[in-house]
Image (cartoon, rainbow, N blue to C red; front, side, top):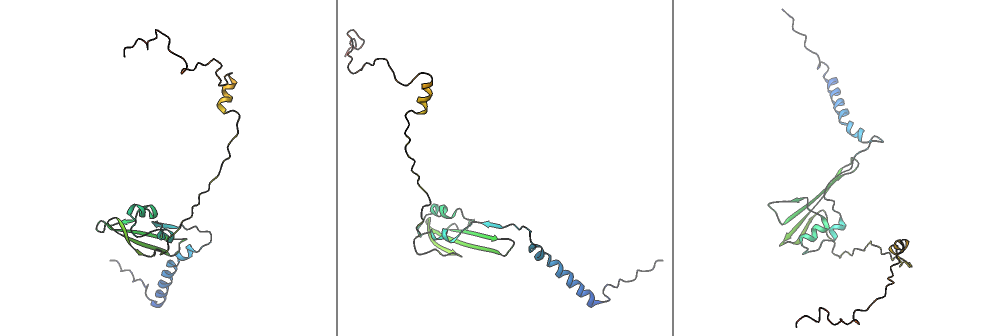
Length: 185
């Protein structure tokens, strides 16, 4: 017959084992903060949703139609089937492994016209005048004696002038016996 194994004496020193368990759990949970703060470790910036900023919200005006809102903000993140008159725009960003920032805005429509805005942004009361960033460049007119086509055809001896004598068709009278004189009227 075999003898039973002696009971393991793991918990013989209870205070020591409790301290060891606490230290082990704290050191394992601290690995994430240690690894994220190491120099030279690249962390990905995570952006999700529709990027919406205050300049975009300032362009919104009451009674805009849905198409105009789509042009300014883009398509909404959420269009709820049960709330067809409400569009939700959500944006969250976690930059360099830091805290996650979340922005939310809801637009309300009535008869396809914008009636309300609710969320983290508030539209401005002053109309926004957006300056154009386009520049106009005036190109001077080129003074060329000959065009490229005239230069190419000049190489083959054709200068574009017809030296044969011209007859003005308005001065020419039909000769007698021509087919136009024989037609019955």
